[in-house]
Image (tube, rainbow, N blue to C red):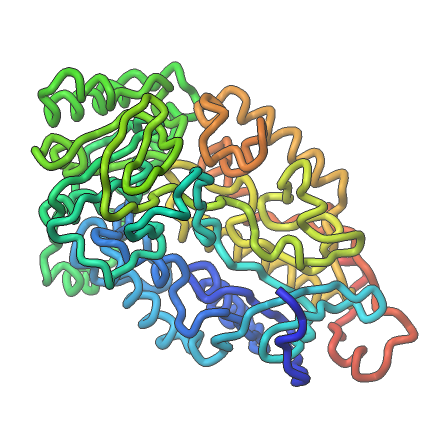
Length: 511
């Protein structure tokens, strides 16, 4: 990216949010509800929705119950127990319009660089539609953003069609085609049952088998929303039931000696779905349940038993002509290759272009992606990350985490307003202490069991998982502590315009 694409237009805002997906929309609504009206959302695409806009593969949907995948302030009448992609996207659009969030989104505006100005105590963001100057920045680009493409020799010379599942090519007709699917993660589990009836043959390359639980998906009665509208306690009870079910699953993930029943359920699901012993053996993981992302599906295993599907329990090492070759010597001819190889989880695309007080975020994170409560990074004043490092688990619904984080962020910004300070920056010793406690707690969880899943954003370092309960996460994010931040007062040499942009309500001390 270069700054040569920027215009000379200049913009001012109190808070700039980067990204208009699930996280960014939650951020602008939370800010407006907290009294922050001067907010702008910068979205590089021409439409809101984030990962739900970008992922259009057949069968794309949510893998947590629908009633948990909604904002608490915007209940929705879901059509199924687990919503599909189009319904989630419609929900985000409707919610944005209802709360006026769509009015502050600047579409087709890509952030090229963001720099903290030591003199004015403000962020300057160069974008494709001009420069934005702001007091605070909220990065809401999400972890499921940039597809991971494998480095496979010969892939670039494949004579057929190649595309990543996260950027599905709908112009390609799979009917009667030989399809090679590389990867067996959450996306494959969803799209494989959809493409299998169309394709002449599907070769599925599996480098690592997954633990798969049955998915209790079901259509919801059309009158259920009206019932909940008249009986809100019933809806809260249903949400509570699902939430505590998810939490119950999370307990053995933190205490692996309790994993037996979950592993037994997953093995029973596999045994009743796949009769072929050889295939069943190939689909049986050797690592503990929860060591990788949890997957639910009631259709994936039956699809693998269909006569036009063959599982190759090996990674792909090369492509020669139309042949896809596995590490075990397997060769299969294909017309189409679908790369279901996941994302660069936690690899923030903006990191090399985010300049703090001493270098870029990419440099800061070179040896460890760290943030206090997954939200604040020392050396980046007035900058907040949504769904930052070590803030997610295999069982906590993303909206729950987002809303807790945004309560924390709005509390921080309110302290900034009330204190008369111009900047807050988490103290490095507080960040370091949090990191030590977090990684010590992770050490005994199943999240650290494999050492090779996408939980490990850097070699040997789990940069994804929160090692404690959701209740503890919410409690920590609810209790904003101003003492763990360093507070900076406005410089006396600032111009009148700059001073006017800073908080004016004095306080004896920050917080």
